[in-house]
Length: 308
Image 1 (cartoon, rainbow, N blue to C red):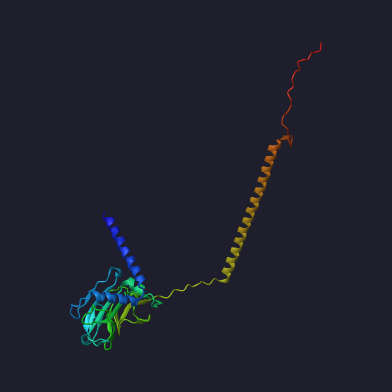
Image 2 (image 1 turned 30 degrees about the horizontal axis):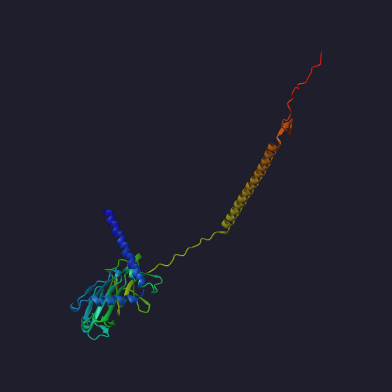
């Protein structure tokens, strides 16, 4: 019973993974994914939370693997004190443009599946993504966030850069002893690479989507060994001799087979003729014989013997 229950759980988990991958395949645009996440965030945001309190947004099941957190700030307070939303640390001097009063900061963790599928169109030739994509976006937040769709605003770090800490979400930044690079995925399909400022920590000057990549090792060229001329000549001679020997064996076998076939045909013909003509040996000569057809003599009834 336990094994059956475990099998059912495995099947259900596999089906859930396939559905997630299928959904991700259907939403291949990173921009479209951001808009869908924004709409779900607006619907489930608790506007009674205090300013600066981080709230986790529960997405539908078909977005399994994506984590979203959001917090609302006053633009002036964000500029004076900065803020931290999960892996993102916004230092002092952060400008939000345009912002009338409040801003809603959204943090995304797209997970492995959604990251690899929705950002596959970016040119990462020679590099491999080794972390989930982290997104930092901002939207205007009025008195009632749930009314309408807020428009996107920009976060600009003019005095101190935005720090992104990947240490809690990836263990592959030092793959094969190579330190990963910070990748910034721009909206126009461009990827900008920078060095880390410390292990698993990157910096940025504005909002966007970020990840860690490692450079793939170049393909190892196959070196062809040079063969000396005398070895090539000896090898060619041996190969030619072996080929001639095999060809001779083949010809001999074909001749023997043809000869055997001719002998068998002669024997079969002779056997047929002997059966039809009944050949027998007369001395040292083979000659056909006829079957016995002699009439048996009979004594006539009117036979009168001569007197002695």
